[in-house]
Image (cartoon, rainbow, N blue to C red):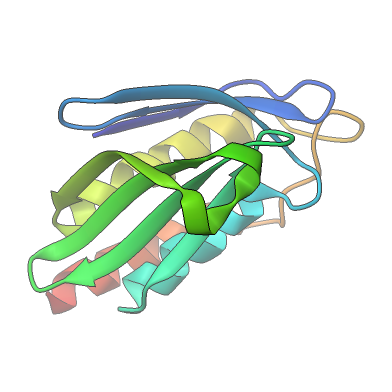
Length: 145
């Protein structure tokens, strides 16, 4: 699995997610929610062993990343929804792996994103230390499995 975020521009960020047999590419908006902060929170939630859903708004369509803990680690499902209608979302990709195999690529993508020093008007500023602290969260959760 690979995950990349582009340099944000005017409230939009490029997203690339490579799963086992699927490559998803899209541009997500920071309105009405910040999906980068949502991803940070989602990593913490799934590392704690709870399901979580993350919405990437495309104005009006959307992607949903569904994280489900499994006995072997995590299942990540990527669902596309016209008009961001979650009830009608279609599965477009899935990846199952250990916590490390799923969460570390996401963390690496966030670390690269952080180097762009996102700031208004291009993107909301990241919480200081929010991304860096995820590494320890992932390692602690992986050690428990």
